[in-house]
Image 1 (tube, one colour):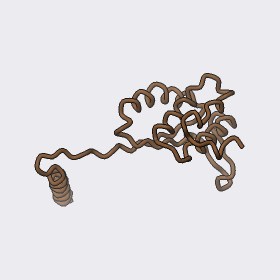
Image 2 (cartoon, helix red, strand yellow):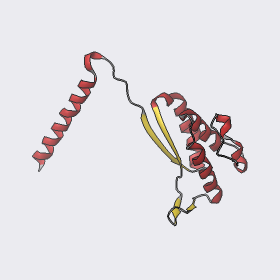
Image 3 (cartoon, rainbow, N blue to C red):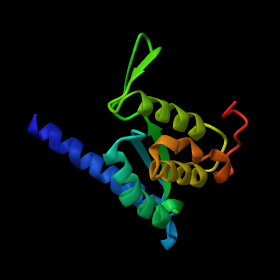
Image 4 (cartoon, one colour):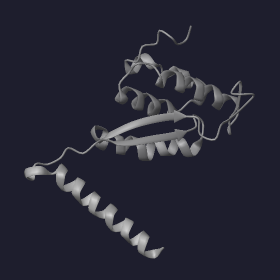
Length: 147
């Protein structure tokens, strides 16, 4: 059993080295792929708000050219009745905020527009007027919103 595991480990290591060497042919640098980052958060969660402001905003500003960011405003929500009802950790207002953000984030837009919109809305001082952080301010079409 142990010999088989060692044999597979060596084989995988050699395969990895071969792939790396083949990719760096002739001393040319190989462009790194972007890192896929999926962030699950909640629109009214204090921890999510802190994360957006203290970690995502500065990191995204410095690394956005190297990241594929997927924002998912769902967090600790749960659905029942085959997705017909949702319950959110911080109440119905959070569910409404999650739905609004999900709707905006799924519109045709650039990654930069989506991330900036989500960060701005999360950091809005007056949570009662969070909808005032409108998508059109980030050049995201609002044809499907506020009708």
